[in-house]
Image (cartoon, rainbow, N blue to C red; front, top):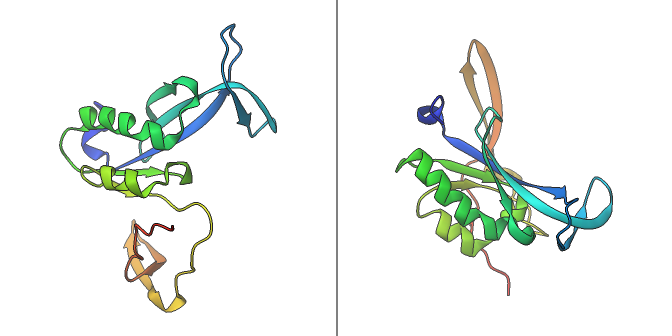
Length: 152
């Protein structure tokens, strides 16, 4: 943080299951790489935009990302001060209720779980920019779709 603090604009948060080999009883959790449920804990990593780790939190009893993000973001806030940064996480953190909490202090970038309507092709436009002598082309939506659609 001391080296990159002023340059941080995006923080990537991701959970990783770690098999537990100790003598205490732990709940079983699906371990994707082994395709089996085993006693495990979850580590939540916060990385900068270069992919370098800033810190890691080990969850007690495998709390999910939705449950862990408020505490993680409290620690991020203590490290970066008052400035607004963007927190990026996968669908494990999808929760409209949580989004409303996060957006009070941070920007966020994530995606939804499950089925959702496709965004119409006509909402996208081609954009070009030059960076470091190269032309880069993007296809971006002109207007973001509604963020907080709750299904009942």
